Length: 99
Length: 376
Image 1 (tube, chains in turn red, green):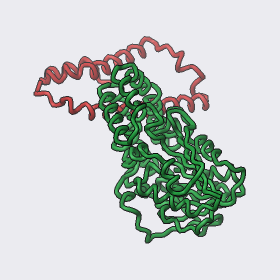
Image 2 (cartoon, rainbow over the protein chains, first blue to last red; image 1 turned 120 degrees about the vertical axis):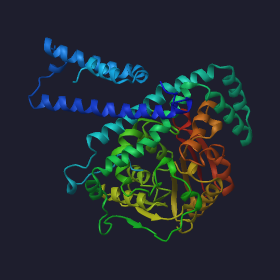
Image 3 (cartoon, rainbow over the protein chains, first blue to last red; image 1 turned 135 degrees about the horizontal axis):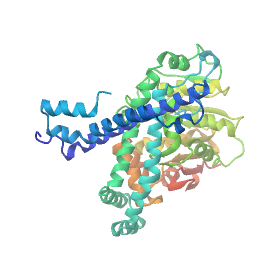
């Protein structure tokens, strides 16, 4: 890995980025809540249907792949920084899947 | 600022309001501030008060007689609490919310500029009360030198600030309390009502508010004293326009003037009561003294003054004094600490007032009430 770029003086900036991320996350979460409510109101979804939904095998597999990809991208970021060869990049993308 | 009195008229239907992004973003800031003030701050306070340094400073605080001594105690308290990461995180979040409220609020209103501009558009002629603006008024240097409360461009810096406060910051952020001297969970509208209740008489003919901003206190005064003539002054034309507009929408006649409160231009002995709300910590000490003398001049004999402001350091714990002191440098409140070190009781007596009393109405000394009368 290259020399560390962020030192203790970057903590403040990271704090602000984290708060901005929290805001973006919340805006999205809020929007989902509204979407769900509107869908229920218009009969496209029943009350509690989303909460009770049990994915079938195909959907479960898709969700698992999505989850693994997200975890790998976030928690694996430090490792990704340490091996930036073309091979490693392609291997990581293949592991995560394209969706 | 006018928080909950948006009073959207039929002429701007569909109802004026923020979009989803603006609303949700500001609500998140309100929730963050509420959590930080009601969870992180008490944790930092408990840690400080359980420490040996906290106990020593509590003793020093109780014994501090002169302002210089109190200033030293507050500075030392600050250096102790700043070692606590929980304090630092809570203060970081205060600053973050203080800044981002305006950044997100302005963006949220700007997204719907046409709608909010229509909402704020003044009528051709005021139909109730009066609005006297003075474009030639030169504000005092202390006023122009600061971006008060981290507000970009200060009070008149964005033409749609009225909408930012009425639809955004007021109902979504400030409503929860937990900023500056306002405690977590405090009802800031009820605090105004409670302040007005400190006026000792049942009726007043003419009530004056220096530094009235967008007239929230005057409108609250109308509910308590519906027969009183209400007059206010402020340096900000934007706030005065917003206040007059909201008053008209509510059918309340008020008389607003763009004036420097220390030279308000009202005749001698022309008002029965003066009320101030969150004003004195925004004036330098010498301007406050000039204000007390000016209000004494315009009050009739036997008239009453009620002031509501953050508490003096001597009336709160050293931990809370450090909380208040922080606003001076970190929320663009250059005179906050000098106000908290002042003794308004003595200053009012020097101006000629009698029957001076001061006391707290709520948690951590806020609102701090000082009231007095002009000799009959």
